[in-house]
Image 1 (cartoon, rainbow, N blue to C red):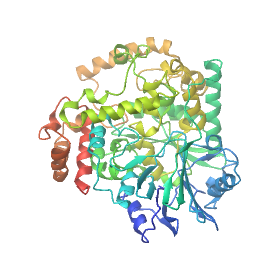
Image 2: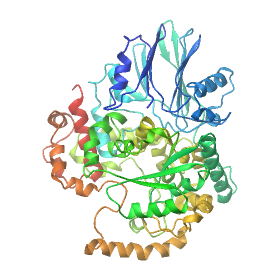
Image 3: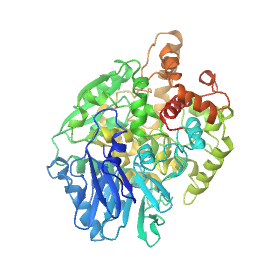
Image 4: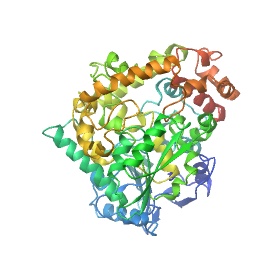
Length: 591
């Protein structure tokens, strides 16, 4: 859990807490409130041990998320001091010794209120894995980590931005720095945001950047970068687990989670989980991997309409402007009580940061997955989502302008990788980020592939090192050795480099293609939902027209023709999901 809302105008007791609790359909958290001449602050209970909010005679300090500390040990993660981590960060900050890009790793937001000077300091993490949103109007300043809760607190719930809503439907996210609301913006990543009280009232100063993702490669070669990469991930895991006796992890048929399985200390009791429709190829491979790494394996099965059933709850939990169907753990986390573990590890964002997932590849080689990857030069992401469904909605030109501005903004320092980092900085531009947003509110989630070393290496090294898994494979090949003969779900052998797998994967790719077309291979063989089956079901059709108020608002405000839009073949699968989510959001909004 753990969210906050800050207001420079004092609020009534309980009002900010109610807005935070409103994002939860179940298990609403305890919320602490603080009030003074500096304003009001509400902070929900942090699931990560040692990071509850604290108050001194001069300051109030809140930590959102569970950052891993690098200036001291992290034994408090299993201790009984509720503010040990918060106090450590505060004392280092108070002495002026803290280095935000080195001393803390992983997702975090730090908020410090000086009760005497009324100065507010808010620090975002390297990539803004946890987004912070700001409302500022007539000397009233409000900050929050959940955009809809902040909008309600600022009385902005009815001031929706139609351009942003269409942008979300077409492009899967709202283009940074905009949000679903006309007067709320996203804060800057890797920055110190300063709010001070002047004679004219509260004023937000320009954010001070403490780190920038520059294209400045300090490594002599790919082997040197790979060694630093492996050391960084292992160090992160060791720091988290140093005082633990058991942990959990997600384990798939891919390679990222088996790397984590290989790096977790063997002295720990380790439970591995995979979410599936049924015991399929994904589950069987994951089970074999678990056996090789000595991990206790658990397959968790979801209902046939799980994703549709959870749509309202997931949408409210992660906030408008992000895709609900990436909240994979929601509901299923209760099956094996994931919140009882001191740490739950995943393999999230390895593809994005280390394997150039967001780099546009030449289309021919993209279709034939067994072929080597080549970057498509001169690709611009500005019009990406507009190519499908762009003519069905209003505000197309406004969206293009925003995305063009975004491209110009990211070009500073990223001239060789503009198109990739258009999506990466901040991470709110990644459509799958709700996976992280949901997990951190449900259990103590740790993602080693977003530690500070990975972020900095990903920023520094050239794209060609990431393509074809070159950097990743060199870094983690020793860890993949125990499962070297267990295939990846896509037919590769992750232990081996790309040039070996081109020959290995080709016959498997052909065989599966024939199997699917002849009906020998049936059903959903992967870990995620079978959206083709879902969208062809009667349940989908009923769900789509369930939210009449939202459908009417869509007709009036956003679309040229909403009557038959669900059946339009020009919309992609994701765009149809986004459309359903937008209709739900409009149905519950004050419009």
